[in-house]
Length: 310
Image 1 (cartoon, rainbow, N blue to C red):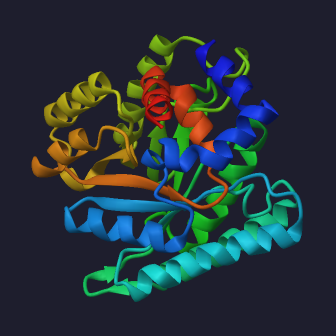
Image 2 (cartoon, helix red, strand yellow; image 1 turned 180 degrees about the horizontal axis):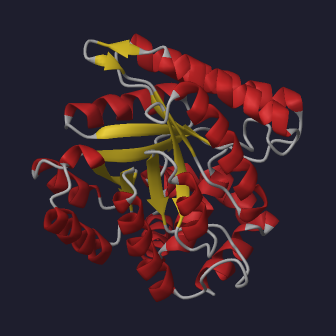
């Protein structure tokens, strides 16, 4: 109910125009690295110096014409070029609707393939450094996203292409079982889109329980798991599970969103666990920011305090 309310308010034209105009200066900048590529590269460099990995996301989704999809694809090629020039690992996250999936499935696949091809060409002193994580969006695109991911992972190897799965969807357990025909790199999130009760668990407790089940199911199937959550109860439970089964540390990593509980992630990094921050940037940041507010009441309070101070 809280998520639906916030997302409905965020769609109001007056609210959206006001926040888009002033939001980055009034608190939204906590969750978004900035509007420009140079902002994202600077954040990536700083986190790498702390021993924390990054995955960069050029924000945008749902383009409706081929020219916009081409522009989005080129923005990722430019991002990877900049990371290569700075000798930073080329780990990026991509939304397929930004690549043109909603315009034409072939176009979406072709543009995403160009990004994967560029990323996989990146080499460091210890071997390949490029990796593309395909984000999961709302349910009209779930099946197509999995299909595109399969084609790319089969072509370029699951070590170079990963996928996000959402714990709040009923179907995810079956999707995970179908993807367990070979070891893969899977990122688990709770899910932040507005979905009907017939598709997604309406209760937070049910989502949390399913999240833990999915990670355990993935570990048992031999996948590399990215635990992407700020929920410290879930983090504690999964850490205990990893220790109990003596899971090698190269089989998992902990991930968090830029601007949220980074102190917890730093503690995990100091304890020797692999960690990564999801760093978004770009002019089209409003939809992403709205979903962050809808996820946690604490984010609303933070933004409200920043507005009041201004």
